[in-house]
Picture: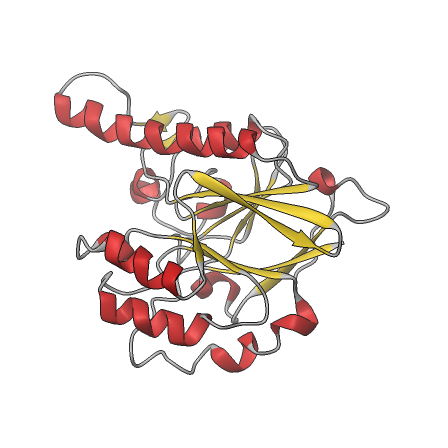
Amino acid sequence: MIRIAAVGDVHVDKDVVGRYRPALEELPDRADALLVAGDLTRHGTVDEAKCFVSEFGGLAVPVVVVLGNHDHQSDRQDDVTRVLTDAGITVLEGDATVLEIRGQRLGVAGTKGFGGGFKGACASNFGEREMKDFVGTAERYADALREALRSVECDALVALTHYAPVPETLAGEPLEIYAFLGCYQLGQAIDDAPTALALHGHAHHGAERGRTPGGVPVRNVAHPVIKQAYNVYQLLSDTVDARHEELVTS
């Protein structure tokens, strides 16, 4: 059994430091790894990244993150990534990592992702150069996630994104902004690999639970949705196939 703690959209700045830490200190008793689904900071500054490290770094479990749109706001995403990696936090963007947990291998493939919408109400790669660039960006992120997921040899595989791969976890958000909260290409990439679980954030007013067309459980772990420091999800049950397991939330 592998226990995954997950949260997103924590938006850490100086005034947030100390808010999550007491619960995070309890992680070794509750989970084997912590995954953070983007929007680690408010404006993507180096100082905010250092605040995130003081809150989420130095834990007794591995921490794996992707960046979110807020983490790109100041165009310092490379510097933000450097602050995080220097503190021992794994930052994924179109790549993957494997964590050894009690003789089992947890694979995590991650990307920020991008918008574009979902089947029947999505942008198309046609027309003006600006539209082609927009859709092309979504496709590039999805293609990188697909390759990262396919590259991993592990016992349980998790996709970690900021943008949503399915519309079900956006329920509660205005329909008009679905195209800016996720895209169907991410869901296709997740279904093209033996993914056991997909985690994302970004949709503060969305719903927690959904599934890809291929049946992969999707969980929106944005902090405003889960309303706690993290949720815990359980994979590799001895009796239930991980792809179809009813995931445990606590």
